Amino acid sequence: MSRDNSLFEIFLYVLATIALLFISLPLFNLILRSLSLDILTNILTSDFYNAIRVSLIASLITLTINILWGIPVAYLLARKEFPGKGVVQALIFFPIVIPPIVSGILLLMIFGPRTIIGGVLASHGLRFTGTIWGTILAQTFITAPYLIITTKVAFEKVDKKLENVSLLLGKSQGQTFWQVTLPLAKKGIIAGILLTWIRAIGEFGATIILAYHPYSLPIKIWVQFTSGGLQTALPLVIGLILVVIFILIILRLIIGELRLKAF
Amino acid sequence: MLQVDVYKRLGDFELDVKFELDNEILVLFGPSGCGKSTTLELIAGLKEPDRGRIFNQDSTFFHKVGKDIKVNLPINRRRIGYVFQDYSLFPHMTAFENIAYGIQDSIYSEKKIEGKVDQLLSELRLKGLADHYPCELSGGQQQRVAIARALIVEPDILLLDEPFSALDTLVREKLRQDLLRVHAEFKIPIIYVTHNLTDVFELADKVAIYNEGKIEQFGSKDDVFYRPQTRNTARFVETKNIFDLVVSKCSDSTVEVKNDKLKLTVETKQDLNVGDKVIATIRPEFIDLLIEDSNFKGDNIYSGILRRELCKGAVTRLFINLFNQKDFDLIVDIPTLLAEKLKLNEEVVVNLPKESMHIII
Image (cartoon, rainbow over all chains, first blue to last red; front, side, top):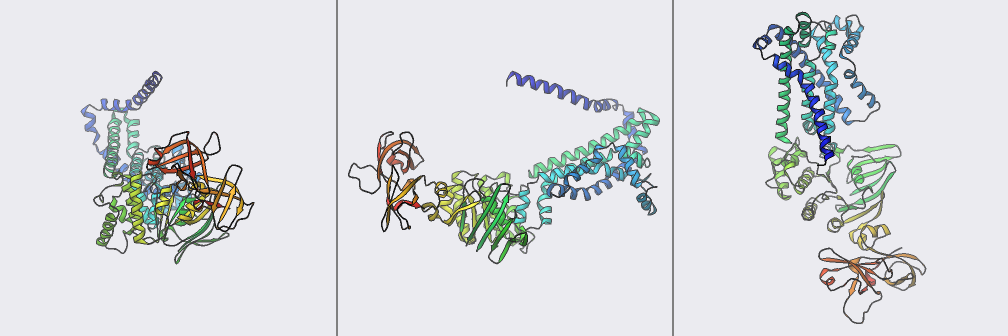
């Protein structure tokens, strides 16, 4: 290794260390602060239970909806050429590039009780403000791009030639999708689903506009923080982080297992 | 019978080919990028011709006249076995599952499927590898799985796109024998794309020489190798000794052709006249090296200086300088044992047998 190279590497390592410290500092700080038993025993309160229940139910319904319509969108974008594809791909990024609170306002302008669509739906008993459906609406809108984009990449990574082989062997497009494309894209799709789930559980900006009540976990944290300060919010913060870490562990386990089994 | 007559434009490249094939092995041979693989893709339906017709036995795969597509049979109804250069095995399935894939969800019972897969495993020397994933198999084993997978659906045509090009010589040799055995058993048209001359020699019943999107020559192996119809065909099949000459004398079965340096007598039944410009060719292996110190007899005896030797194993290639002072102008292949007696930059005498020479008009 030349001297230039080693200096360059040292430079990279220094910058990388600074970045990693910056990213991990809040977590380390939280761990240090939560070492007191009081805080840990305060996590499992009825407040936490109610809020996590809302977050989990809403996020699981969000996930189901996004899987049902996100996977077909991702597959079509990955495999088909059609006029306006570039525009569609740009549109999918829209919920990511605008601030979540703005997304909440935009959704309120369509699904709020005084709008045409919101009014019609409310007359049939489906209200999107102050109900868990509002939480679901916000989460679905904000997280849809995450699932579509990750799943699209997973489909693109599947060699098109393998799908052609399946067709050449007399299989239908449907059989090819279920027996070749989906199993080969499975790892990426599962990763996308779990990341979408984590993002849904943490959704705050759009949710607070549409559904202040019932409290989802991030909103409950905000309420506790503004009313009781840091100490009252901290147990909920730790609880939320533990849930996210739990999902990340599942993600690692699933991907690890898949790699061992087939790849 | 497979009948292909298609035209396809891809950017600046135009493919325009027409041929017919019985239950034979047709080898598509030519330089890279000349349209060989595209022809297979058009037959399989992976690409759509701009116009033309593809027809196999009772089934029309494709028929387009002008802008009117009359028939375009979906890929999965063409009954085509297709083997790719990179094997393209399903990485999430074992060798057994890969082979069985085409007949799963079919009329066959599980036991019947197992029987058919087992038979192909043994025919293609894959016994004991059924439970292996593709990543656990060698290149040659993967390609045999790919061939078995293509054959299990009992296709009407088998298309192979440079199937053995990534494999070493010994494996190629064995796989060629496997393919000939498969052809003898299945008796279907096989189209094999390659730019390896040994593949052509060992496999072909018919050869199509491709050049820049067109078929330069289509015919039997002997026709293409020994009676090339164009200079390009002669070059592609490594005829090596190609001379531009003019007919100077004609008789019943021979003609005399010459230029300012060379005068050759060639046995031919072609209709030629004095003054015709022709190309005379002779393959390096047909030229005799005259070693015995005796009175040489023959119409086309020349002496020259041996400039270079290239040992290719059993055969050694000699580069002989007949007229040029710097370069060589004759290439001769002789048994390596004979070549050991020769010395560089010394005189050698060769005979170009008139019956082994060929005239391209």
